[in-house]
Length: 144
Image 1 (cartoon, rainbow, N blue to C red):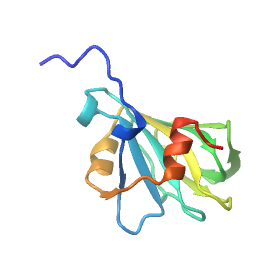
Image 2 (cartoon, helix red, strand yellow):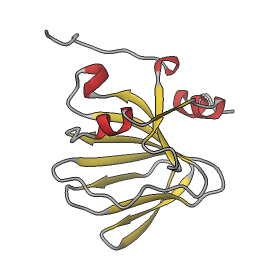
Image 3 (cartoon, rainbow, N blue to C red):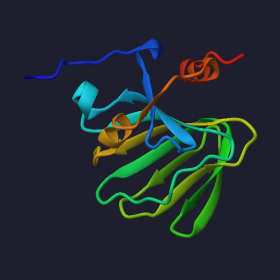
Image 4 (spheres, helix red, strand yellow):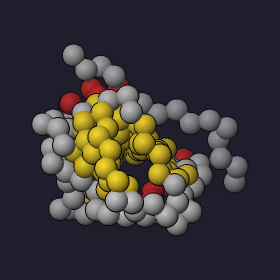
């Protein structure tokens, strides 16, 4: 079966998950191979204050983070860089990394992994999370 030639979703259609119940970050799924038939995964990754990813690497995938709101730090192969709204971080395959929220509010990143390399499956097998009013406002660009 051929996938549809285009996909359109609204913020109300987004489902969110924590990979593990104790994680301090969660993902609003925008596009992924499981739900949309694309070859990449695109999410809004939301970090609670003080939250961070565990150290991780990807064998073949590149991962990009566009910071939508908040501030944080990227630790990549032993180097540290501060990140804030408007910054883009690209990680090459094999780069060990941690992204952490160093701000007082949530950190929001538009995160893309290509190819998917099991990312969508990992996220969607996690614990469902309800997006907050603030989350939806940042995602839709309607922050006041």
